[in-house]
Structure formats: C-alpha cells, structure tokens
Image 1 (cartoon, one colour):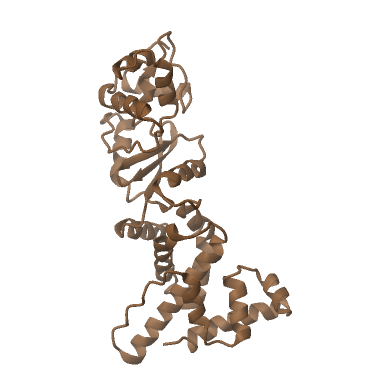
Image 2: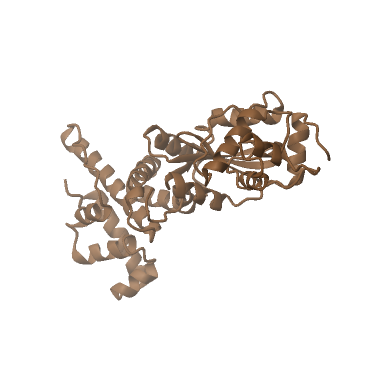
Length: 191
Length: 156
C-alpha cells in the first residue's frame, strides 16, 4: 500500500461527505495496544482488541451495515478524542453515540444498555446483580453471554462486570486488560 | 443490505489501490492520476452495493477506473475543442456497457485485447494465449489501444 495518506484521506472524506460510506473505521494506539474502532451513521458499532482480526471484524460490520466501509482517522477525529480522553484519565465517561445493532438478541441489548447507563467508571457489578437489574435475577449466565459477545467493549463497560465468587473472570481482551481497565478507573475489586 | 457477500470496500482499496493509480496515471498522465482514481473509487462505491456478485472485483475496479479515465479525457478534449461547459456524463448503471461503448469505435482486434485485459482480467500471458500472439505483442497491443483512446479515438 503506497497510496499517499493524503489521497486516501481525501477519498474517504469525500465518500462520507457524499453519503457513500456505510461505516468508517480507525486504528487507535492506546496503553492496551492498537484498538479498532468502527462507526456507522448512528454511532460506534464495533470495537476490536489488538489480538482480533481486523478483516473478520470489518466483515462482520459489513454484513450488518453494508459493505461500503472506508478508513479515516480524520472523519473519526471526535471519537478518537473521546477514547484518548478515557485512556489519558481526562474524562472516563466515553460519551459517544453507540449503535448496538450487532447485538443478536433483545435481552442482550437491554443488559448492555443498562450496564452502560448505570455502571459508571469506578463502579463494578456482578453478573448476578446485573441480571437482577435487567429483571431476570436467574439469568446471570445469559448476562455473561451478553458481555462475552459485546460488540463494543470498553464503551459498553463489560469489564466492570465481575463473577460473584471473586476474581475478575474472563474478558474478550484478556483478564489482564480487564484488571488494567478497572485499576485505571480506580475500581475496587478482588485481584 | 445485499444478499451478495461483498468484502469491506476499503480492503479492495488496500489490495488494488496502487496498481489502479498506476493505471489511471498511464491513461491520463501523472498530474491527473490521483484525481481520476478518487473519482473512480467514488463511482465504484456508488455502484458497489448493487453488484450482483463478489467475483472478479479487481477487474471490475479496473473497468470503473478505465471508464472514469476515458470520461476525464473526453471532458478535457471537449473543453479544449469547444471551450463550452462539458455535458454532464450520465452515471452508467452498468460499467460493462459504458466500457463497451467507449471502446466501440476501435478495431476489433484492439477491442479484443482491451476486453481480455480489463474485462476478463487476464495478465499479458493470458491475453497473448487468447490472441495467439507473443506476450510482447499483447502488451504492445493493449498499450497502443490505450494510447489511441488517449489521443484520438475517443467518441465525442
């Protein structure tokens, strides 16, 4: 790939301006590695961890939003700033529009929406407690699945959901990343 | 959302952008290549969700770029000849038709060479095999055809 960055930027911006892009993506360097951030018209639709295949993640987005996906740091400037502010500890709310259309069931969607709305930076909740708050106190396992398949990790903070029995449990980005994010937010949890 | 599985558009740009820029420059000159490629990729984006299948996407991008480059040359020529504002070129729904009409006035052998190279996406060895000539001759035939389109053969 030797096309100039200026030309690629220009093409991607023109595509967005003319309403030809179903989604835009960017790669952002962070303390936990290079994140993939994909944003559609309605908001951030997918966040990928460093170890995940960019091709596979983009193909997943293409299947839902359409194949006209372009890359542009510039078009996602505002979103990149919000993520950087989170990792810099300047503003940990990650206040960006989110599109949960990659979530496969209504239950998972309500669990993730509620998690994002009610469990802020510095807080943690158990899978069971979150299930109770969604109105399905016995659905701790289903809440676990909702978290495990969360298409927008970090933004929808499934790292703040912990097993009732102690420890940090599993995480898409790995348990170390989960611990790191919680420590970064100043949460109290059993290590 | 289409039933056809198409790869994310940018993966095509990453895979083929370089050679498409070379192609656009060869057809329209170094100074215009980037503008032509941008225009071509935006046209391709517009048409992308309507594609009926996801095969031969590289060849398709070559056709869109070729058509865009020829439109560019035609518009420039009209500006030079008439100094009048160029007519708006209708957006072709199907680039194969546009491509055919643009090369329609060329000799049959020349058309065949262009079609083998840019529609069937054959390399020069493949073009040579199909035309029954040497690789050097195939390459020369395609490049002469592009030259012809650039300098005189473009239907106004």
